[in-house]
Length: 210
Ligand code: B12
Image 1 (tube, rainbow, N blue to C red):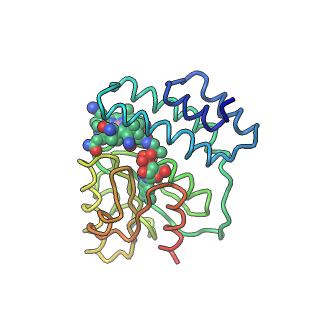
Image 2: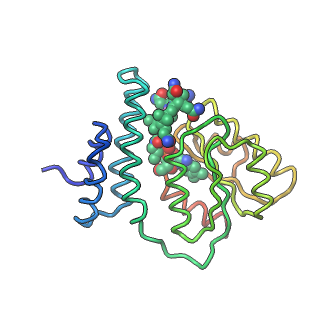
């Protein structure tokens, strides 16, 4: 029999929007760690969907259905993610998906993980104009500005935020991520932090505020 994590992965791959929430509830009942269910189940499933879309094997409607299935399961699993060991407030983080980019699933995951690990998160949503990141970081006296970019075409937007932040000497550190972003790219644009997934993003964020 398939285990709960595999069932979740396959449910995203097969766009089971109607039944996936029940599978997620079942997984929790079976005692599966919600973070494992998200990262090894849902995220692996949507990765496969993305690869098929990239190869032209499936089209936008399927991509949307895969994402909807993932979101339905996340609605069940995210609230169950255990809060980490944390101080009262680890610091303020302004987070969002960069301008011209509407991908929100990864950003939301990082946002949830940061909140559940004691950070005070100001989530600006998706398609956030670059000056807005700067303005909000300054306004909230954030320690970190966290940016997500899912497309090679929108990655350069992150540099548009980092430039003015350094120029204004706001002392806000930039944490960047998203599928096409690499450690090398992060260094190139002067970001202080990079992480390829939501759980290690927390470790990096903690180091940045230390
Ligand atoms: C789901 C999805 C969509 C959904 C998004 C739904 C939603 N509400 O978010 C929909 C269907 C709307 C969509 C639309 C489009 N998409 Co799309 N999409 C994807 C897909 C399959 C998965 C993305 C995802 O959610 N992954 C799951 C999450 C959990 O992973 P993640 O985002 O990578 O996040 C993790 C890490 O990267 C990291 N992370 C993420 N953000 C951050 C931030 C920080 C600070 C840190 C530290 C870490 C971090 O932690 C996360 C958790 O581990 C990807 C394929 C892929 N390989 O990424 C394509 C993909 C990104 N999309 C693509 C494209 C082309 C599009 C469209 C242009 C399609 C179209 N023709 O309209 C539009 C874009 C519209 C726009 N202006 O933004 C391309 C981009 C190609 C490129 N140029 O680089 C991809 C790569 C697919 C492909 N192979 O071609 N998409």
